[in-house]
Amino acid sequence: MEKISRYILVFIAVLTLAIFLPWLYWMAFEKPIRKPFVQYSYITNEFLIHRVSEKKWVDTKGKEYSREEYEQMLPMMFFKQLLASGTMPDSINGTALDMRAISREKSFFRLKANEIDAPKPDLYPLFESRSGRAQLEWPEDFFRILLTRLRTKYWKKKARCFRPHSIRKNLFFRRN
Amino acid sequence: MWKSVFYKEWLKIRWFIVVYTLLGILVIGYIFLALKHNFAFTGGKNAWNAALFQGHQFYSHFKFMPLSGGLTIAVAQYLPETINKRLQLTFHLPLAENKVMLLMQAFGAGSLLISFLIFGGLFTGFSLIYFPIQMVADSLTTILPWLLAGLAANFILAQIILEPNRIFRFFYSLLGGFFLTIYFASSGSATYAPANTGLFFLTAMLSIVFVFSAYRLRKGGI
Image (tube, rainbow over all chains, first blue to last red; front, side, top):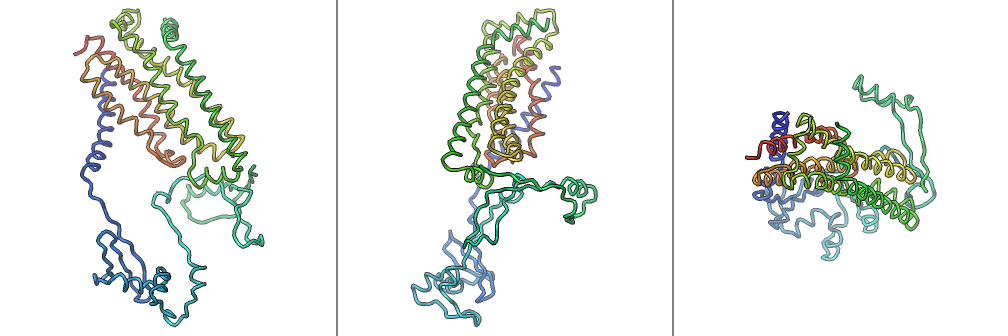
């Protein structure tokens, strides 16, 4: 008994040190990584890299640009700046630019690495696409799909096909 | 014989475990009072969205409750035994030495488990009033490592208190402190799901480690 407990003690000590010694080491010696900001320009049809910490604007071949040149190659992103300095082009690749359309239809989508594969409850909002409102509204109802048969089949055959006929039940929850 | 050992342990920890359980019930009561208030003032829609899409954990006040319970019970149970080396008396009982120790530990951990079961039952019951079972299951997955941490803290502190050598004690405290943070990594709801089985087995293994400290105490400490 004493022997077993001693082995377990050593095992847990090794495990703990294996987690925390590297952590402490990297805390002390890790060098910060300055992430570059990469965008695609459809004027030059190339990726443009903004190295924020070094205040450099380069393309993939290493050619350096001034900040103004860089912004002119990305008119959608910096259209307010270009309008202010009067360098906004009238058209891009033959398409005329409408300032109102740009500001209305510009949209950003941000995805964090830790959101990929993060567990989520199997509850989904059901949006009404024809509610007559200008914007989508959060629904009052959430639904879940019970895919019991689909899941067992998936694990048995590892088939990646979706079989709607095997959905047995949809249950709705009403929120208060 | 085991009944007498249990009775001895009960005499030591009864008020601690009773008061701790009542305090825990009050904390859970507060959590659901706050949730009810939240539902009434900002609406169920917002509460659901916060829980589902913004990673809000309405039960975060409960996080260190099991940990404090584990530490309290370990102190109540083993600190009196170290005064004048009273534990040596226990070793003169007509029972195998390790068996007595394991019985003591089993009683302490069992009382904690009963408390935790009461907390878990109340939490699940009240949660089901406000949320569907999927969200409640996710909350329980999030809470499980905290409960395991309570048990682990109990075992580790038992080990530290019983250890006769100060240097060993220091290293046990250091390692134990680091080890316990494994259970409390900041994370979203249910992100501990893949780790819970491993943590469960680690905690189960920890439950007999203190036998080594008791053995060293019995031999007089080195």
